[in-house]
Image (cartoon, rainbow over all chains, first blue to last red; front, side, top):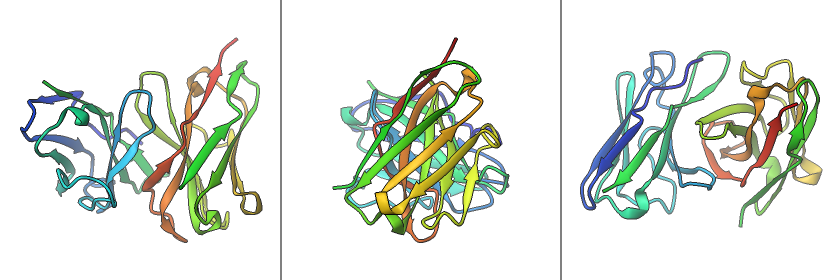
Length: 111
Length: 122
């Protein structure tokens, strides 16, 4: 099972909105509404930001939103803040022998 | 407060074995599936293995199948990963992660430990 494809880096200025894409296949992202997103600051453990494509866990800012179209899921960060600078990973359930796969990861830089 | 504390990592030679442990607290351990996720130095996340609340369902990544064994002891609120026939490519920070859903397995990881580093080298 190959990793889901994400852009290596995305950047934006404070206050702007950015979108991170996560591209898979019909066997993972496209076939199930079981996509999640994680934020990871340097030296820290990942944090769940979005689950089931677009749901936010309690305590996660509503500046973070998720969506999906076909085989591509997206994470949008609105009103970009300095604290949003981190690595972001998508994840999806898959129909392969490995039940879940992560994306390649995207480094978000706040200019 | 949910806490997951991993231990057991270290430097090990290729072909040898290592057993990781994860001590859980702050939640009803036997209500949730648990997972191991690893991250090689400077690389992305990789799901390694997961176990259901009652150990009735277990899964492994293809990369570790046949070499790693996950287990849990609900009486001790502990999760384990027995790693045999270790390879250089198993070098990574190993995280213990709690599944978000009760009873079932959602593969959403809502709490993570800080990880334990495994280095496989001669």
